[in-house]
Image (cartoon, rainbow, N blue to C red; front, top):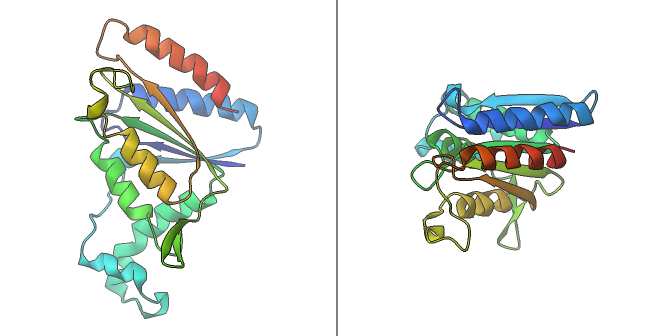
Amino acid sequence: MKLLHIDSSVRANSISRRLTAQFIEVWKRNHAGGDVIYRDLATTVIPPVTDDWAATFADPATLTPVQKAYLSISDELTAELLAADTIVIGSPMYNYSISAPLKAWLDQIVRMGKTFGISAGTPVGLLGDKRAMVITTRGGVYGPDSPTAALDFQEPYLRAILSFIGLSDLTFLHVERQMKPEAAIDFATAVAQINELAK
């Protein structure tokens, strides 16, 4: 059993990092001998998608040394994802959306022939045998019945792109009000939920 642990906050002592660490601690207790692959996106240099990205559609045998070097981090990140049975992503909300490091990671792991394919002209996700959990942290409240629900560009995007690569067994845990007086209450509630979810 392998778990891929991804932190995407640019803050070293962030709430999302504390919560993913809690998940890993409980998961390790429940999976003796399980392996954890850790990826800190804030300290990983991820290149932007450029014209060189076209190399992902080429025959690997024809790639130039420059193309291979460009794709090396994408290959590494994608291999980590493919090796995992469970994926846990810590995602703080920045300006109603996700962090830049997380977006950069997603751009690198959406790979034709590796995480999605084409069948009868339609994209098909290839990671349907995996379980994924996204722990989000938010300063306010963005649930479906809240006045600010329309400003949530975090879950809809993550749900769409992760589903695109086949992660249908997908759970979101939203830890809200982290910039409000109720922060400690919501954090404690999230820890209790994590203790149940990390199985």
